[in-house]
Image (cartoon, rainbow, N blue to C red; front, side, top):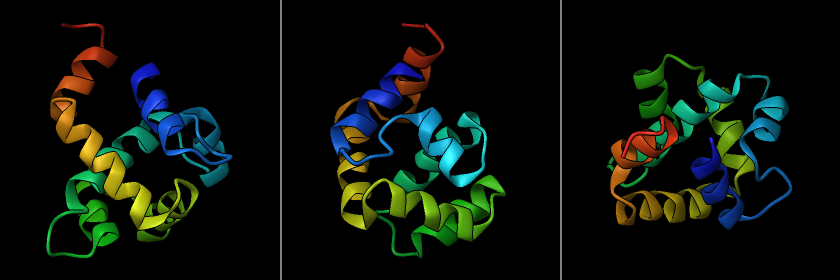
Length: 101
């Protein structure tokens, strides 16, 4: 989860690492990782970000809204989505996360 933690740290805030964020919202780090990826995916789309991510992940909308709040709101989510795009997208981050190049 190092790459995702690094991106979260770049966004700043008291809840910058994945495990801490997961504890704050009452989800597993894996669920939070999935949630953040889905939130980043739906952020630039013409749909409600949290509702789109909820439909994709099966996580409750209120938990996704909590995550958005903890990472710094919609603005921070937009920066995260931009970092994903510049860094090769979710597939690249997942490959790095799993130790595959």
